[in-house]
Length: 248
Ligand SMILES: NC(=O)c1ccc[n+]([C@@H]2O[C@H](COP(=O)([O-])OP(=O)(O)OC[C@H]3O[C@@H](n4cnc5c(N)ncnc54)[C@H](OP(=O)(O)O)[C@@H]3O)[C@@H](O)[C@H]2O)c1
Image 1: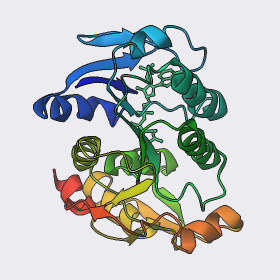
Image 2: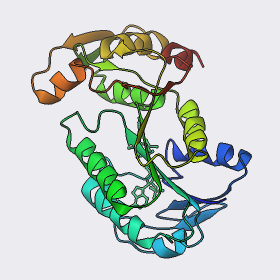
Image 3: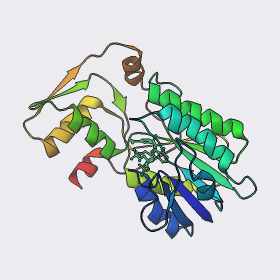
């Protein structure tokens, strides 16, 4: 199938190309610069070059996102632009990469992801909304950013179930090969851990001597993470643990 990966230059997107090609797809990777072999230009924030990028697509894996910039412009309005630009007669499946808990966690970026899901459901296109938990290397990045010299503060009792990004990419390809569910599918890592457990494992592997300090955080966001709103309720699980990721 002629396949377009939006966000194909990102953390997940980079890992999608190989498995998609191995499954027989002809893959083009959309990004704002359109660089590299198989790269095409397309900007969800402005709509520039979107129609050309999507012209031949039978499968779209929509993994582009802008969590640190303006997710309402890129993720929500951008998904609306993508829906308008896609060739409805050619498209057989659009897999949208979302996050477990976007419907339950009161966080601005997650609200935008949930709104993008609703845009796709309302579009009438053959979609699957694939919600995945946090990637292991995303967790590494957050912990590195949170470290303050010899101290690593983490929110107390937050529960997460992170997943290997390579396993997540393989699962995206598996879902892309199924019929569109027109509904939510979930995928998470093999084990539930608290933020403090993750932090202690990370410190032991990467920054020995750093002290992990779990601090109670007030507010509805914190309550949601403590109540397990970021944990998958159903669906398949990856096998690689966070400890294995750190050893690797
Ligand atoms: N990170 C996690 O732990 C995690 C967990 C579950 C689900 N997800 C979801 O998985 C998807 C991929 O996440 P990620 O961490 O791999 O993302 P990422 O590394 O931040 O990559 C974001 C991608 O979006 C593209 N992009 C940003 N703005 C764009 C625009 N205006 N037009 C076109 N493309 C644009 C970027 O391309 P250029 O900059 O090259 O243009 C890049 O390829 C996201 O939808 C995210 O919500 C992430």
